[in-house]
Length: 416
Image (tube, rainbow, N blue to C red):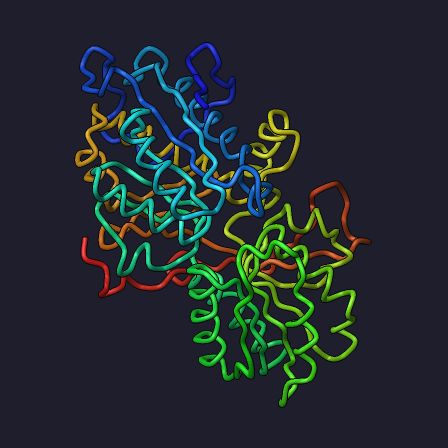
């Protein structure tokens, strides 16, 4: 699917991205672009478990970034021919691999964005390295993208398993319960989540009394075998830590409530949660649940202004994945503008070490050592239904986790 955005479609509201303008606007006459255009690719799940939290609405977010970029630079933009190619990877690594190759080779894509599902994300990283093309991962959480699988052309943008465990695992162990039973989807993301949470729990003085990997995708939607096991473990866990996401998280929480595990003394901790998950389940089903968030639409006036524009186009409030895709697309375009070229090596050089402040990245920095994009994160809690003042405003931010603390230090396994 190909979508086109130009100056005529530009938003009236211009988002200025501090720290990423480089040497200022480049004349369109000085450009050195492949085919005199820029092509952005959004590769994600558009039909399965992760389609609501990102999916086609991430394409809308990228289109908003293009509109804001062209509105900002006008005829000084490095090009006004900026298009979007999209594809559904169906959460399958082999499909992600083939779609990424098609985007780079046949569709002329300069940058691939999003790619939820860690096993798929790692495949796309390999393709980006081989093709020497840019890839900003938004939707996957595996720390391998900035560890053993890092490469010069891949940047990890929004969040990772360390960020999630460092916030939720540590806080829940300290404040709610020491003994955990962990249920995770049995693929790269879930395995990484289990390791990261186990490490954080142990460091906080807790114990993982049991853990199980559930099939992914779980086409039956049935998690009863695992959930009914939890209260019968010895010692009994204080906390069920579910690492599922999207539609699978919705099924786990519904069955957790159905089996009344909270009444049996087993609390609930969610490893990864999106606004769309809370909307599907309702705040009543999750009231009091604490989790780590990368961004929240109603955190401040700046976020809300973006969320209002997004809702006008998409008909829904943005998740952090939508905001991150917008930010990543905009920062790439700014880097091309500053470099005056879409040459991948030149763009990488301009991005490395950049400090960034925009609607998604607060105290943001693109680390040169491993291409981890660090930024503030948030410890959030789902409101009880009685405190929900308007649709989609389901969360209160309990604490801002500073960028310097939210993410792990660069890994020795990363060899750019």
